[in-house]
Image (cartoon, rainbow, N blue to C red; front, side, top):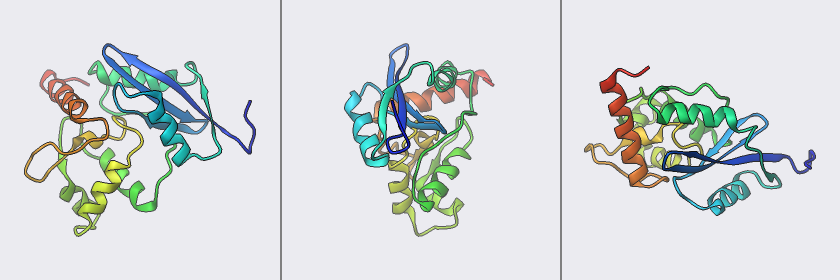
Length: 178
């Protein structure tokens, strides 16, 4: 049971083929998409830091709409997410995360491109830090951000996950997916 003093964060283990990630949502929307094949402790650490006093409750049914959209994306049939989000961040982080959502499916941008886009060209490092703090991997597509030289750069989910997501999108663009 939860109450106003201890609201809930609902979670499930999302599984699709060899993808296994913990996902979580408040009653207002998707709050967390974890790194691939990481332990439950990653979710616990995130929720403790971002939502103190919240209670983690497993609720596979409540998370089903989010899981469906993630599955559609991984199958190559979804390019944009329509589920509601609820992830706290600073005003700057929110601006950066919104800019990430504007990067078209199958395309990449550099950190400096994002800094220019949000009209803070000198804030490249701060943009990188905000991107690194993105709590909802895949759905807020930080995997689409690469180094200015075109090199793949750090990713909370790991470089293998980033590479797979970029390849999935490239394949989707080549196939003309929706």
